[in-house]
Amino acid sequence: MHRLSPGATIGILGNGQLGRMLCLSAARLGYRTHVFGPEADSPAEQVASVSTVAAYTDEASLAAFSAAVDAVTFEFENVPAAAAAFLAAHTRVRPSWRALEVCQDRTKEKQFFASINAATPPWQPVNALDDLKAALTKINPPAVLKTARLGYDGKGQAKVLIAGDADAAWSTVTGGKPPAPNGTFAVLEGFVDFACEISVIAARGQDGKIVCFEPAENVHANHMLATSTVPARINAATAAAATDIATRAAKALDLVGLLAMEMFVTADGKLLCNEMAPRPHNSGHWTQDACGTDQFEQLIRAVAGLPLVDPARHADVVMRNLVGADVNNLDGYLADPAAHIHLYGKAEARPGRKMGHVNILRPKSS
Image 1 (cartoon, rainbow, N blue to C red):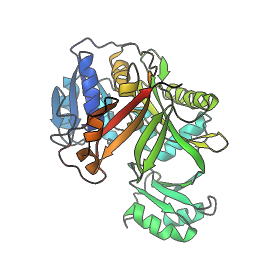
Image 2 (tube, rainbow, N blue to C red):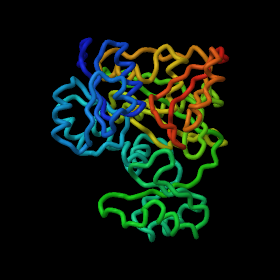
Image 3 (cartoon, one colour):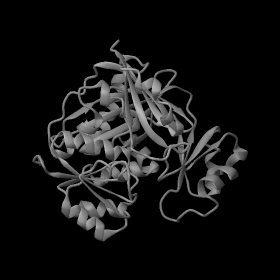
Image 4 (tube, rainbow, N blue to C red):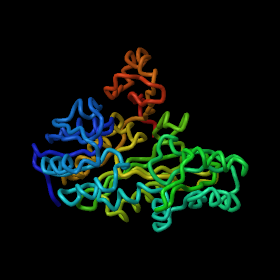
């Protein structure tokens, strides 16, 4: 294990709200932070010790960044591969580039799930319109077409409700331009008749120890997470199985840091893996106020070589995202001592923009 001394600097690639909350957790443990990202006056820059505003392709800035930090982690996984590889050649990067690479590409992600015997919804790779039409003979619509890389919060996706929607869906995800010839451009996924959606956040330390936060039940609106509720409405066996999948995935990736696993729970109790992300996750924000330690501190501990701690929950909780104009209607939450508000420092409340979240606590029921 390589333990960082108090006062060491942790580099964070990405300077959004997840980076902001990582900076705050690092500060509580005595670490400085240096964030790197393309946007000025970003949520993370506002609270970091040092900030570099530069493109992820700027190797001179990346070199200076790597020389100024003692270790690097990520606040999101969609950074250019070259940037991550460049940093890994110059300093310690947690999680490893291998974990990042698998999670960046939906085809590799689904192949990885299969390798650890974790089930997924039916899917097919798609590189051309003819591929899509052929895939629709194997996966009966309704289905959804998703770009293999860079999609999130509903971006890079199109529903295919009937086979006749193929042309329009292909045009939507390609923007009318032919895809690059290398790799798999998109995947077609069959719709799942699920009872609920859940996620599990696993943390793995440098010593290989893995601890998991209990599953959260997630509800989406307009392709974006709206609420996460804990405890989830699942039985103990399903919760244990979901935690086991997250544990196996973190171990198989040899990950040091966090892994968020999103899953569907079918009506008959089966688990189908949807996506994973090697970073803090929106569906783990509830941990900030309902647990003895939260997802952000666990990541800092893992990166710094500190022991992970039991993330036991001490309250029931509902996390609500504050999106767009929601941030202008906080009076009810401000007057409620059970509501814990977290704002991201964004000046402009645009439609669909995550402005913050609130964790509403209640006495623990189970």
